[in-house]
Length: 613
Figure (cartoon, rainbow, N blue to C red):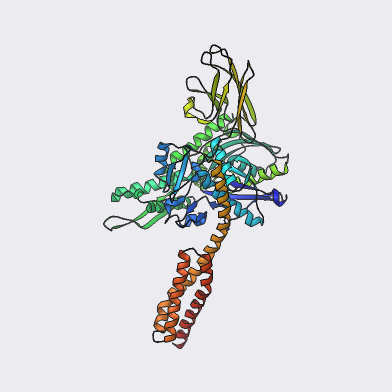
């Protein structure tokens, strides 16, 4: 595969993201700049206009919580819902606002960002990681999404890829992608279940694998069920316990809440290997009278399991219905694969093994399998190989609104794609000459409770009493999951059609602006990385000088030469600190040699004094 044809597979996760490629026929994860396989899906905006991604953003979240965006994937492609917003805002330190297109936006430093924009920043970081490893640019990508994402969420993810400067060859479901990685080591016919519980979403898919064909039999999930919810239960336990003891609500302070969040996540991770863990947060809260409060609690694995028992049971219920839709029993499966960081929790492994009646498989890395499978799919698409075939399903039913506000399904969920379905409808009013057909996605019998994808207006109908004019409506879904709808008057053959292309609620102008900004920040990020590296070197020398300063001042107190050296030392410390505060890389680099000389001189003065003594 040439440089121009390199395809990366990207798992855009709620908590962490991962990028991989295929080399010499095998997929491999590309480590980030810290040498880690995954990168936190966190984006932060600093007061000086810097944009931080990944670990850099996570490190400063405590002091900049209101402008640090985590779990943005949960919001991507969602419409504005004031009730849902109130529930989310209780545990999100950043502000959610209503966008101009009735969508969800995130406000940081007075600027509004769509969740797709936030996703594009994370994807741009993954693209940069891959390019740095490969030594050349990356154009093509396969990006994964939760199997239960609807059309709007899928298209918003695709838009995010475009804004990151990527040509997205395919959006594929995360469980299906993990199954591709699993299938590398199995050539025989197998039926498997993929249980995928990540930071923000849950999916389960039942697949049949045979001779390179990966056929999804059924899929289901919950796009608001993941590690974030498990952490929230721990936070609530800490908050309510503290309120009971001290009559103080810790949720009222953003920084305090961020410390609780970090502590809850760490405790939950620790309890995957330990039976109990200590949560110790000194100086957590100071009241109006200046009194300081500390928090110290012991959380046991048993208590965590009790706090989250219903969340685990929700996943098992979804597994049960998914198996029923596949017309299979647990004993008819060959393997159960666990994907997503939350599946490291022992109670989850126990619950899954108990439901399926078998030990869970550990043949794939839960953090890397999805990205690895995406890279395999990308290589397959680019090379036009015929030995690997994906047969996926539509996760949601598709249909139209009919008289009385009801929902008529034309394509049921878990139908293999590509597919096409037609149905004949009649007019509901006398002598009407046009009809508006609302295209919907969802499972409710009430049209208003489902997602509106678009509309088809068919006019020029033959005026006739109601019920006499017949209209054929046809739905088609491509292998890419793109939906098209046509409506035809059977008497006149008058026809109208649309291709449903849900968007991230961004205008084309907004999309182009974001593409250009990502290019600018891709260049700026390298400068920022260099600044951070030089800053760390400077701060190390500044700390050494500060530690030696009291001793040096005592040694040279009566020396004119020494006083001059001290003055120069104070000057260079001030100059270096100013360049750091102003984030001026050029000034910082020019100050470093003098800083290093001062540090060397101070050490020599102290060492000379020690020898004399």
